Length: 134
Image (cartoon, rainbow, N blue to C red):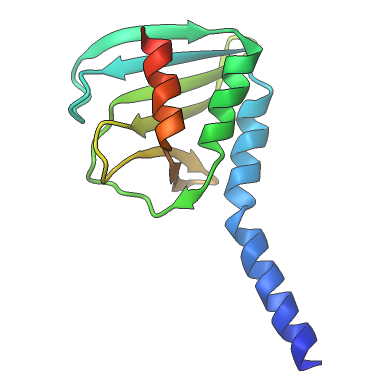
C-alpha cells in the first residue's frame, strides 16, 4: 500500500510538470502562420529590427516543438529579443516572448491559464530563430 502511494505521488508530480508543455503545444500546433518580431538583441523592446512571417508547416512545427520543450523557472528581469505570434484564420492564438542573446536568460515566456510560464530556449532553437531572421 505504501509503495502504491509513493508511485501515485511520483506519477502526479511528473504529470503536472509536463502539463504546460502539452497545453502550449496544443494551442500553437494548429496555427496556419507565425509572425516573429526581432528586437535590437540587447533585451530592450524599443526597436523592431526585422519582422518575418512563416507559413511553412515544417518550420512552424520545429518552432512549436522548441517552445513546448522543457519547463524552467521564469526569469522576469531579462528583457526580450523578440516576440512570436501564432495565428489561426488571421486571429492570434498565442503570443510568446523570447530571449536568446543572454546565456543566463535563454527562454520562451508566455501566458498560460493566467500564469506566466517559461520554457528553455535551447541552442538549436536559437539557431532556428537566427536562420529565420536572415
